Image (cartoon, rainbow, N blue to C red):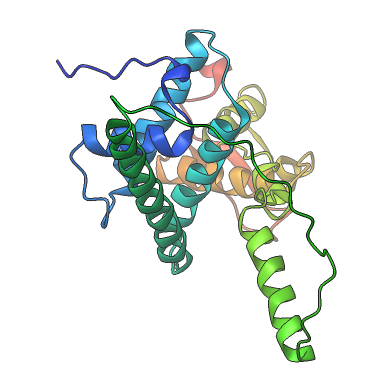
Length: 242
């Protein structure tokens, strides 16, 4: 059984620290990260922290949202953007790893030596921007900033609302509906079966139900126009004849 990493959030200085620990645990190549493994492990740790009722800093949740977005983009048919996102994350992890290594070396170098502390010197900086740029350069920088903001923005669910909000009528329910309609009288007009339909899905389900019943030889459709044609229950299936 694989042992899970169990940490307190105080053990991590930030989400990059947690990601590096997961990379070391799974023996991943930092230059070619398997996003599916890393993302699932990270989200699993965040979920564990929540279950243990630990206080989670906002930067850990922001990284979780960022990783979920990367995983979503990687599932799309055209996911050229995922390579850029992956490069950005790899660069941040490398920079953080180097800083952490240097900090560890410096901590050992100061052991056994007297330490001198100097208060920081206060400098007054001129906040005015004195450089000049071409208008094309400013436009390019603005568009780059806008695109970067859109990249990390939440997905817009509005285009999918019309698709998932429609009620899908099952063919099996309409088969039961047709049988019950013909159970006592044994016959009716074909158009009457469609008269109460409230949606295209219900019309299609009714049509498919009639086809299935015809195929199973449970109903017969007589001659006539589409709506005036008579549909009757095959002998042996009427309730009053059973």
